Image (tube, rainbow, N blue to C red; front, top):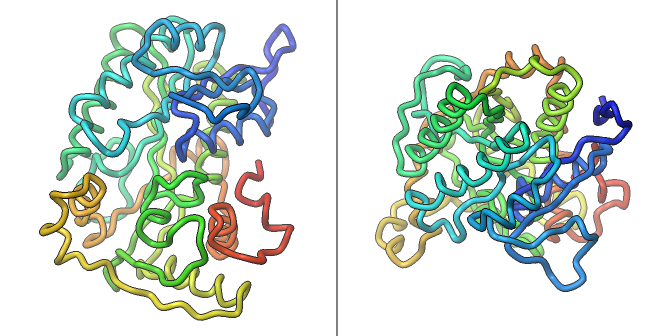
Length: 344
């Protein structure tokens, strides 16, 4: 289903806040490919970077954000505090800024969610209404953010959609475990640093698939108002890896197939991280999230299936090749794979 056309025969308009990040840039690509009008909002763009709809501004600048949101039907809140710093003090005010302009426009706010809200382990996949008992600082912030959306729905009728997913890969920007820990963007793969615990499953979301699911949900909301709850929450199942090591092994196989080289898999030296994390915000965050690699956490996507019929799903090996190619870590990949990371 392509983007719903409104009564005036104009496609819907989405404002993507944080459009240079992983989720944001992918939502810009996916929505534009499906016929949406997209305004890409970010703190700064490279010189001569794109069309007029690429807007520069800070999410905390109420006037700039309000002007960017004029007339939109969707606000995608894909912005995070820069450099993994000050989550406790910045994340919620940034979300409230997007909530304010979405409310002004009567727009649906999309918040890409994650599994930080939940403790790992437990029987079976987690449904959307599972108890939220976060074990980390960022998890507690995430719980507070989602609570703010529910309260705004009850108080003001704000429409929101939280699409929760596991660790994502396939982003154009280095903002995930895949391309900040496992492989290094922009250079050939020399080794794969694997955070998984052997025998412990893990859930990964291929970002183009997750963004496509989000787009279809937003299109459903445009075509059938009231189909989504005011404060809707949906789980994206993604790739549930039973052993956890399948992703690293897929990277090794991709390099072997397309470059004829064998690269080693190295384990994350978890034991040393606490001693060096004080010097790096990134390493502090990596160390804090270790619990998600010690116990499995799967998501129940029954709600998603009930709304759009099927979950977009690119086979793991194909997704890995596209992700490596997209971030410049795989040389000589076939031309037909170049566009697979952004196919609608």
